[in-house]
Image (cartoon, rainbow, N blue to C red; front, side):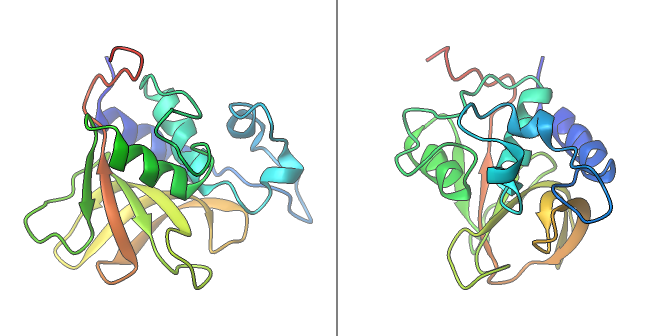
Length: 175
């Protein structure tokens, strides 16, 4: 049985491990994340694996999701835009703009950010661990674009593009 609560627990543990890509003083340990994407390797994923981290955590939590669902018009779930495409086109998922005051984010929701590292839409993604009145705590891969996973507190502001909610026990193949 998979749930968003289990997803949040796995994401927190994975972020605190931490995972890291190519660093000067350490061997990368993102191979388990990268291995889920057949066309990728550590060098190609380096400094660009936040969405793959989210996918890895979803798979570890037991969600049944292919790395490239039919709904991913722009790419696979190794990209933030792929997650947005997936959520907007698979009606079993919930997609809520960050500005939606009627939506209350919960642990295990996926959060998509705008303009965190570069001046671009959906340039980063993470998994919500805790929702606070003015901030969220999230587990993220490749934080600060420095190739390391972390648990971070982020303000609820214009950088939060959207929240994606995967239903508990989600199985993409059980359409």
